[in-house]
Length: 394
Length: 91
Ligand code: FES
Image 1: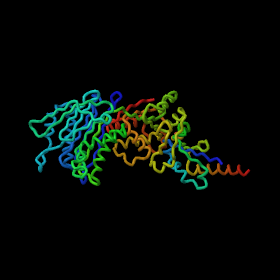
Image 2: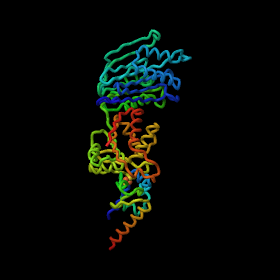
Image 3: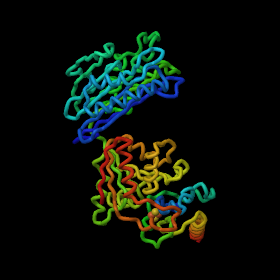
């Protein structure tokens, strides 16, 4: 989500307990663009495997729904507790959770029940909550719910995790009481000191992986680390298609010369326009052909960025994103996907001139119109990848 | 001796009409030719839009565009150019 100049990056990384085929933790993320709100819910179901997963999933689904609809906290928690099925063996229904409700420019609330306490960091300094209240339900007196209020400033990070992280290594000589929150905190502070701009995705991965590595060769409990990072957005600009009017070529090409964190030029004609207007030359290494699968190999325009073929490559990127199966993507598609992942805002600069040659009935297959592909990409990037997409036509 | 410059179009139309094979040209050239030809990829040779439709794939050899290029036709062209060079050298 981006408001003004800010972007909320939310990512979660999980590892499943060894021997189980479902993770007993679950998380859900939601962006309410119009309300400038981001919601994240993480839950750890009792036990492990599919049963735990169902408990956790029920909890995150309800939690997300209640938070979104601003239902009173106590009522939400009680409803969740009432709804969860009771374990026959332990006679309890249980799923711990952490929920964060971030409002840009406003108060961020964190609600926790039984999960390790969240961490908020400004740079490497931990930020204490402005307010902390503990509420107890009359009907479930043994369940304590902690409510925190804080303010997230640009650059701040919020880290939620399941006890698979804080209890990692439990019982080992070095970690009698597990890694603990303090160990986790110290680890994160070191990471941020080394890489102050580390993304939510990389941080979540590093923490989860570290927790996993403490006990070599075995994952003793489901591990989840969820990171929310409020930061200036990284912008990927994709130029594709020649402008409708040739007079606009220069202005169009200039957009490739700066103003974004990453630039991709998708399309041969498009690349030629930039080459001409910016006096650059694309380098395509044909040795890459062997590794480039059934798409033309990617190239590089020094000072601009990645260059790929247009319609075929973009269509492929689109269908890979839609199917969610992005492994084994051909080289050019992979290069685009990676850049999309690394950036928060994807800006499409779309030239609308139709290439006559693409209408040729002798082509072995029909080519989709550029505008359509961009439309499909916009939808999948916004809904599935939580990116902000901006489209500008030329 | 200057190398022969062979540019292969990596654009959509050319790729769909057979340039994917041309891109592997380097491995297909006989040993004695390989050293004398420099092969590069180009995003689009910009002839797809101008030329009458269906003449892709295009390549450019020493700056001259060739339509409906195949591995054989490109090979043939290179052979001719090399022969010409040799003839000129011996004169
Ligand atoms: S696609 Fe080959 S010349 Fe344009």
